[in-house]
Length: 203
Ligand SMILES: CC(C)(COP(=O)(O)OP(=O)(O)OC[C@H]1O[C@@H](n2cnc3c(N)ncnc32)[C@H](O)[C@@H]1OP(=O)(O)O)[C@@H](O)C(=O)NCCC(=O)NCCS
Image (tube, rainbow, N blue to C red):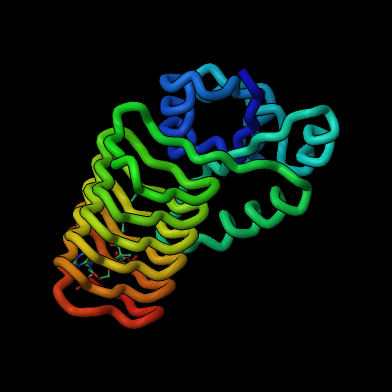
């Protein structure tokens, strides 16, 4: 198994670690997190330092990295780490929990994460580094941009478009063929039945 390094040791990292361990896709080398003390563990995986170690780890031969930092509305940190990883030369694989259901023709771009219980139906595209969180349901022909977070329990009906950097809050429901712009915040539990312009917050 190839090694993978995780960036971020908070709550979301537990979900990512569980998905990687159950799929046996990679051997997790360690976690980089500047806030957690070095030597502590998350689900048995050691925090080995901060992201300043990235070039060193790449030189050592580790080629895979995954961003296990969550986000609620502000994806700038995830984007910054993404750029750093790409500049060094890391590959960012797609991680899909083995209990997620993803139709065969779904296109998922690098660094995206699909959590347990999520269902993604045919014709859908998922952008770079996007999170499709626990039990989210993405129906047919949706187009989800880069660095989006579709939080747990969200339902997107068929043909929904979501612009980059948008957060769709826990349990929100979106009816068919709605267009949600870039950098939007859809609040937890919202029902969306009108298009949402770039940068809009929808309570
Ligand atoms: C919408 C949201 C971003 C607002 O956060 P905020 O800017 O900190 O706002 P506040 O909590 O101060 O609330 C502001 C007002 O909006 C209301 N409000 C907050 N969240 C709401 C929601 N989901 N639906 C309806 N009203 C909401 C509050 O009751 C408050 O109203 P008031 O001023 O009349 O008391 C936040 O509540 C939310 O839904 N976040 C998404 C959480 C999520 O998806 N988590 C996923 C984790 S994996």
